[in-house]
Length: 231
Image (cartoon, rainbow, N blue to C red; front, side, top):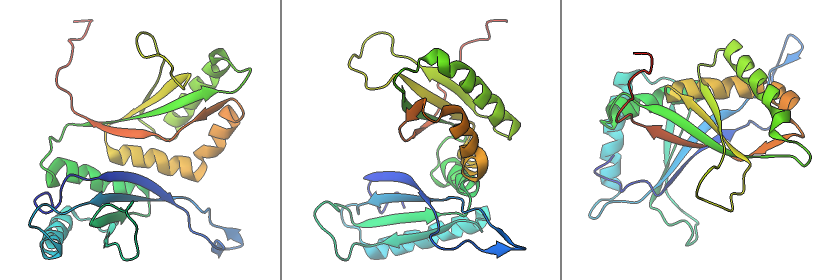
C-alpha cells in the first residue's frame, strides 16, 4: 500500500468492549474483556485513487494469506458525512479478538510486509503522577510486586521508571513508566492478561496512589550495542 498512500496522517490503538449482556454458560457469565482495534488515517499519493487502493488491498490480502492470518480482520472506511477536521481520504481499521493475535500480525508486517528490519523492539512510555501525600518510596514495593506478578503471569517485558534529571523543566509528570517488549505479539499478550484479570492486581497495588496517561508505543531498531562490562 506504500505506493498508493502517503505516510499515515495519524494512527492509534483502540480497545473495544462489547456492549450488552454477557453470554452465560453453565450459569456463569463470560468476562467482557477488551478486543483491540488499530486505525490509520491515510491520504492518496498524487495521481492515485480508489482503484489503486483496491489493487493494493488485493496484494495485501494475498500477503496476509501467505502469513496465515486467520485471526485479523480489516476494513477501509471512506468519509461520507464529515467535516474539515476529517482531513484524510480513507481510514484503515483492523482488529483481532485478542491483542496477542493483532501483535503477531503487526510483527509480520514490520518484518516482511513493510520490508523493515526484522530485529526490532517495542518500547512504551507513560507519564505518571503520584497522588497527594504519596511519595515514590510508597510506590517502590508495589512496583516490585507488580513486576513479580507480571513475570508469574507469563510476561517477559522489561520495566523501568525514568526521572527527569538535567535539561527540560516544567515537566508535568513525576516519572515516566517505561516498558519494553521483544515484539508486538508479546505486548499484545500482556494487554490480554491485563484486560482479563491483571487490572484487578493493578488496582490493588496502585489505586489512589498513582495515575498514568495512555502509553505511547515506539518501534526501535538497535544501531549499536555496548560491550558487556564483564568481558
